[in-house]
Amino acid sequence: MAEGASTIRHVSENMPEINAISYANGQLGLLDQTSLPAESRVVWTNDYREVIRSVQALRVRGAPALGVVAAYAVVMAAEHIEAPSRDEFLSRLREAGAEIANARPTAVNMGWAVERMLKVANLHGDLPAVRAALLVEAQTLQQEDEDANRTMGGHGAGLLPEGGGVLTHCNTGALATAGYGTALGVIRAAWEGGKRFNVFATETRPVMQGARLTTWELVQLGIPATLIVDSAAGLLMRSGEITCVITGADRIAANGDTANKIGTYALAVLAREHGLPFYIAAPTSTVDLSIASGEGIPIEERDASEVTGFREVRTAAEGISARNPAFDVTPCQYIHAVVTEQGVSRPPYSESLDLAVRAGMGGRSVGLDD
Ligand code: MRU
Image 1 (cartoon, helix red, strand yellow):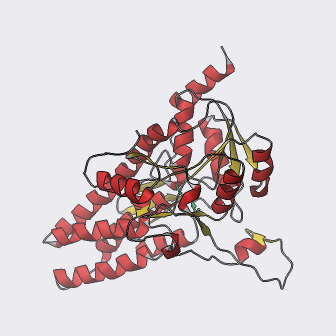
Image 2 (cartoon, protein in one colour):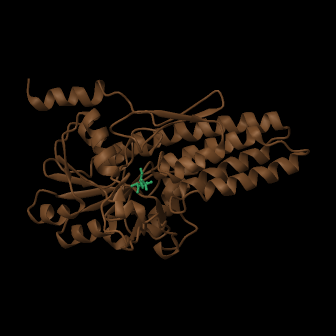
Image 3 (tube, protein in one colour):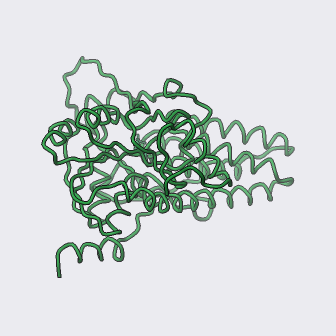
């Protein structure tokens, strides 16, 4: 049997699905992404403030996954709020929701999920009914995200080349979502559909989501891939080994400007210089039509210790100062297409993303490639 044929079977049939987020008996279970790939351990909590700490420590990360845990954090907050009246309960739930939504500022999915949960809380009269409805809503949101990723994979697979090399950045797979993944989901869908190309994954300095998490997922998927340092991308584009780039997104403004993991903008500029397509894959929950352009997207600045060392090991000289912006914004003119669960949006994004978001809210999917 040809080598490729056995790999297809491995990818589509034998792949154990990675489950980063579980909820059972009032407890949220998070596969601790800070200890991967060395150790797979799940941390459980019923405390929404502990969830916020896990989000900030990157035990769970990736925009769609953050939306799902934000929803369960609202469920847990609602379970523990004691209030003399429904109004007082809702007011305290809104306060908890604001804490949750602000845990990390760049990924819009947290605020999006909290808003959706608070709307549901407002619809119900007595507290047991509110609590029950919140749990159903969080479970629905989780399932919808996984479904959106699988659909997105189908829409995006046609964009990837037969042959050549596809570069991805950060981690956008099952770990970063409710399941399947966004950009990595598109890569997976193309592989499952029988396309063959080389996959390149960046390390993704400073906390190595690519080296630790994307490689871990790709090895389990049985998709051969090559890890590169972030700064090798230019060389491999120039040599013709990388022929296309696809990444995820943390927030997409109405005009298509896209915030994603630091280094994405540099990859988009390099892709333009080498005449290569640069794609974004993200669910419509990551599109923020309330922000006109990337200038309005808040950029998280994380602790400098992530740059001056890795885990407990100091790598930089004592006394040096460091900057650690965790995201950058790629202007829309560098982006050839944005893949969502509604289809493939092309420029001008102010029109096509608006259509995609409205289609996701129950309208018809019109004006989009499928
Ligand atoms: O800091 P992180 O690891 O949360 O950053 C994640 C990313 O930038 C991802 O590319 C993005 O959230 C898309 S996840 C499907």
